[in-house]
Image (tube, rainbow over all chains, first blue to last red; front, side):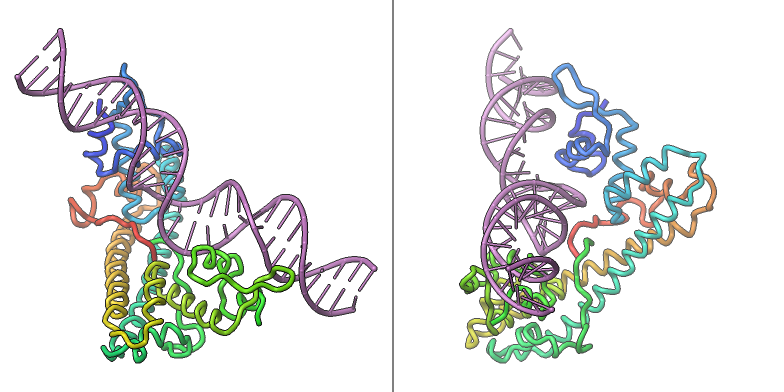
Length: 147
Length: 147
DNA sequence: TCTTGAACCTCTAGTTGCTAGAGACATTAG
DNA sequence: CTAATGTCTCTAGCAACTAGAGGTTCAAGA
């Protein structure tokens, strides 16, 4: 049986995060020692490693919840798993696209910076005047989502 | 003079967001009509357009605050502006890198999915077992930040 | 056995950048 | 004049944690 600290050390998930995962019921309520401290066995360790890995891949906690409940049904088709993973992939792809647009715009701004006074600074100028963008009217879609 | 709704329409920033920006003092307190409604002139419109544009490029509100206060000092050197923009660029670049790693991993997982039962699903298997990653021990750094 | 210090407990509140909703007042078109 | 739309303030919520206060438990050394 592992204490929460050992579990944290062996999964790379921080202690308060583990407690948080329990609170939102992503992890089951832990067994307790005589002194009320949480104790974990192999199954929670596996579950947490799964969560950690999926988080690293950018899955939301909601998606992970779905993946976990699917993984408890070994005889079902894995089509639903595929759907979740493909959705994640396409989100990652669209973020890469958007970020690449931003990168180009930022580079362009920086190259044109005179290095002189702020009054002549292209960075400030471009930020203040949308029409100076690469593609005039809808140059950047809007940078919102996570990752 | 513009009402908040017109300002929102002409900048593409939503009404509650404008009020929020005022609340966090990114925008100055607006003048009010006889009936206590906010009224805006050109200078706030410009400022808000600047903010919107910078947000679209992924700058944080804190960075924007700095940029705005710099842009009020036209005779200073634009070195500080350059630093902020370069920092933003390097953040964007590192996010692209990380996302590209994730994309490769997700694609690899998906290609190997047999389309059969969950028990045989590579997606679930890879998520559960870190050692199945491309680069065995530290395959993905950790996906945390925004954008 | 006692003691010290690390690790653990619960609880609340903060982070970022908004968004949603309730309930009331203002403005404007017909 | 009335109805519809717009605006006001206020509070609470979102994701996914993180930080801190104030207290308890455990393990190792003297």
